[in-house]
Amino acid sequence: METLFIYIAKSSGLIGMFYIAYYFLLRKETFFTANRWFLLAGLFTSVILPWIVFTTIVWVEPTPTDFDWSRIPMKPVQEESFEINWYLVLAIAYITGITLFLVQFALDFYNLNRVIKGKTTHQQADHKFIDLKENIAPFSYFNTIVYNSSLYSEAEMESILEHEKVHSEQYHTIDVLITRFFCILFWFNPFIWLYKKAILQNLEFIADSEATKNISDKKAYQLTLLKITTHENCVVLTNHFYQSLIKKRIVMLNKNQSKKWNSWKYALVLPVLVAFVFLFQMEVIAKEKNQSTKIEKSTTNDVDVYKIDKNTTEAELKEKAEILKEKYDIKTTFSKIKRNSNNELIGLKIKLQKGKEAETVTEVNSSEPIKDFAIAITKNDNGTINIGIVTQDSKANDKLTLSNNVTSHNIHISDDTHIFIDGEKSDKTEMDKLDPKDIATVNVNKNNDSQEIRIITNKQAKMANNNNIYINDTKVDQNELEQLDQEKIVSVNVNKDGKTIRIVTKNGSYNIDSKDFPAPPTPPEAPDFKMKTPAYPPLPKAPKAPKGDPMHGDQKAWKEFDKKMEEFDKQMKKLEPQMEAFDKQMAEFDKQMEPFNKEMEAFDEKMKVYDKQMNEYISKVEKENKK
Image (tube, rainbow, N blue to C red; front, side, top):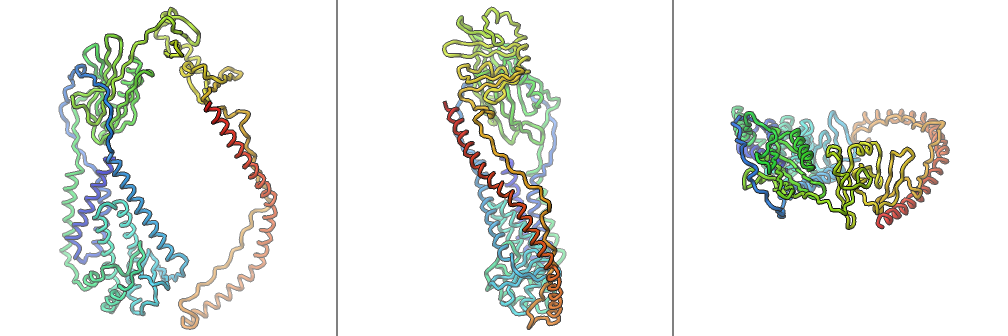
């Protein structure tokens, strides 16, 4: 999570840098199209460059590893204090902000769609024109141009349409959507909102500059800009003919073209980007020569040490776990292993467990490589074993929580102890005769006031592996079966071949094959239709009406339209027999479906009964489980 926030901070800084460069160097220049690509390039550079890291490897002499781990004291149990995870708090705030702005974006898109959807459009070349009656400012959205022609004169409409056509032809809507997307991602950064304003202003400068090239009266165009200022009804996610920058637009229209040599200003951003890379995207990695990652042990007989450092591999972790299991019967689990780009350990969770007597868990999660630490095993004079996590210095590893010491005691066998070997009762004499190599598992249980020792030999364990044992419908091994409290057993079922054993306990779940389990109803089969679903006859395409009305519009176009409509009516009359045949086919199809529909209704009623039976069955099982 820390890495994510560092990335966001770098991207935000680059966005601010590009905006400052535009504001002080390019804002007053008339390189409108070049400014457009500069601003867009700034956004994409801001999100891509922080991902690029240049690494340099420096080889150093290996650190001496003759430290006497056995001299490190095993620290006592320490309770963890409550600490606020500020990264989590910031993440929640960040995601909340994104969610709110996404909701706002969805509402804006809905409002835009409501304005455009269902309206009559007129196609002209690559543009679609929508003439509304609402008092709304002219705007364009991709190739759709929306306006209210009743509010403007013919000359004013010419200026407006030329302006909006530039927005449409140059795909300025894409710029608007990209900017909006960045505002959602970087909503907390004030520069992104200034950046958005700069992009929208520059798009208007582009449209004004290109539109005036096709209009003879430049002064009339500027007067149209002033007239549009009275209309404040604007639709978001679009390019407006009117933005709140009329004065700036008029100034830029009358400004002399910038000299070409001023384009050198664009290159000034390159040294800043290079400085950013050298300051934040260069990583120096120090690697030791001839590193050895073998298991390191203490030179004394009282302490065994298993060292772990940032370069320890998964294979070496597995080797350590196997040795601890074989020598001390300590189950060691390594999980949540995380590495950086240099394959160094930055995250690791260690769980050490000695039967049911002792357990300790240690976890590290950081963006930096872990510091050296070790699993230390000490043997006391009384036969007890201490397990702990230790580090080289007294300060310990600030990325690791010092784990609790755990102690495993030797078991004293009293005379009244019940000993079972492979499920049969035995005694201490027979147990002493066993070769330790032949023992698979040893379990010590306390049953009421007496103590039990249950031993499974390798031979019995191998035989048990051939059987399928289920306790409360969960498959278990022979070891778990031996530990089961016999007083809790409700029933034991063995199948004919003797290879499957099913046991149900008092607190367990009942088998799904119980006689009380309700049977679901069988759904009806769909009828074998003699006919396919009838297809609707193809209809001729109706001609489009010309612009204007029949009285004041293009008379020639309207006469041509009338002829096309007569032809359309003739074609529709020819289709009347096919339409009648389609209606008859649909009636026949519905008739065939009637028996199936009745069966489905009956099936729905049976399903209601089945649902009721299932609820009663589940309630019964829950009551039995609580007993």
